[in-house]
Amino acid sequence: MKSYRPLITLFLSYAVMIAIGQSVEGMWQPVMLVVFYIAIGQALNVFLGMTGYVNFGYVALLGVGAYGMGVALGYYNQLGLVPTLVLGFVLAALFALLVSILVGGIALRLRGAYFAIATIGVNEAIKYLIMGAKIWGGSEGIVLSGILRKAFGADMMRFLSTTFADASVITVAIAAGIVTAYILNSRVGYALIALREDEEAAKVMGINVTKYKLVAFMVSCVLAGLIGATAWTLKLTYVFPEDVFAINYTVEAIVIVMLGGAGTLLGPVVGGLIYALLKYYLAIAFPGMQLLILAPLLIAVILVFPEGVVGYLAKRARGTRFENFIR
Image 1 (tube, rainbow, N blue to C red):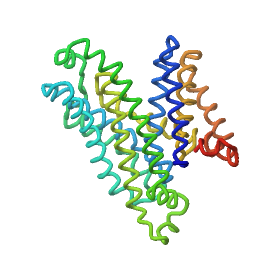
Image 2: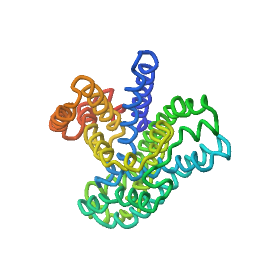
Image 3: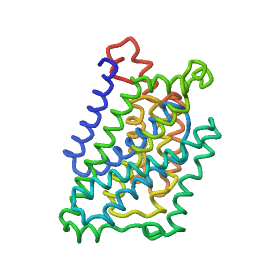
C-alpha cells in the first residue's frame, strides 16, 4: 500500500478544490475548468507519460466520446433517463475503444516521430467523415437542449447540464488518477517504463512492447472518450464537429502533461492547475493578449522544471517524510 500513498495527495487536492468551489462565490466555474484540464492531462498521461509516444490525434477520442453521449441522448432518450445515460457512457467508451484499436493497431507499429505524424490526421479524418457523410447531423451536429427539455423536462435538463455534468467530470478525473496509480504499480507499468527508457532493451528482455503500448493507448482513449461525453455533451448540451475535433485540446493536454511531469501521478494535477488558472485569469486581466503572455510563461516554467514540477518536487522529496506522497 505504500506505493499508493500519492493517491492521498491526489484525493486531498480534489477535496480542497471542491471545497473552494463550493465555499467561495464565483469560484465554481474556475474550479471546474481546472478539473477539466486535469482530466484531459491525466487521460493523456496514461499513454504519453508511460511510453513517451506523443498522440496528436488525442482530441479525436474526446470527440467520438462526445458523439457517443450525444447519440444516446439525441436518438434513444425514449429508453428513459437512467438507461439513456448508461447507454451514453457505454457508447462513448465503445466509440473511443474502437478508434483506439483501429488507430493503435496500425500506428503503434511505428516509433517515435513516425507515430506522432501518423496520428496527426486522425481527428480531421473523423471530423470530415461525419460532416461529409452527414452522419449524426453532419456539420450541423446534434443540438440537445430542446430534445432533453422535451424528453425529461426543463428542471432535469438543467440538472443534467450543471450538477450531474460537473459530478461526472470530477468522477472521471478521479478515476483516471486511480487507473494511473494502478498502472504505475503493476507489471504493465513496469513494462511501459522499461520501453519508454529503451524500447530495444525492453524487447531483448522479452517484453511484448506492442501489446503493452496498445493496452496503455486503449486505456488512455477510453478515459478521453468519457471526458468528452461528460465535459462537452452533458455540460454544453450540443455536439458540433468543428468544436469537438478542435486540435487545440490535444496541444493543451500535451502542455499540461509536460508542465506537471510526464509519467507521474500528480503531474497532470499540477500541470492542469497551472495551465487553467493562468489561462483563466490572464483572459480576464489581459483580454485578447492572454495567449501572448501565456506562451512565454509556460516556456519559462518548462525551462525551470524540465522534468515537470512534480518530477522536480519528487527528486527534492527523496529521503524525506514526503517522499511517499509525491509521485
